[in-house]
Image (tube, rainbow, N blue to C red):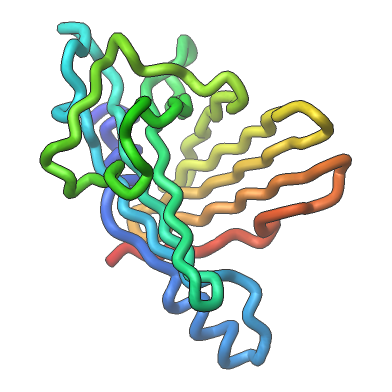
Length: 185
């Protein structure tokens, strides 16, 4: 198994942070929202992929329970190897005409055209380093108008740790520096 396939086995699956939230409740201070991640390879949902295509497109479904409200945030990512042989995450825009509610791994009607997929111009691709049975990556993206986005991830066989922070003029406007700790289900 090459490094990219190894990484994909860590990334794909169903995850939640129920234990993290339970611990925070026990300590009397809830910091993180209840959250779920469902990550799945979606190359089979993409028509017109080049014959020798070597990457994995992944639909990342993120669900955040904030009070009584459920926030749904799907993403389309490409994971491939960069010139140095390290795993790279490139973010894509959701395809035009597909709602975020329909952009799910279990949607068997979902079809995308590779020729129409657009790389996100705002997101700076993230490179993962691998050591001690763990993949770690970090990326800072400039969204303009003083807004930056910092993404840090750690992936092991059983846990995904994700810290996503939006800042405006260096002040946190959304997100958590302390990661959400997702455990594989």
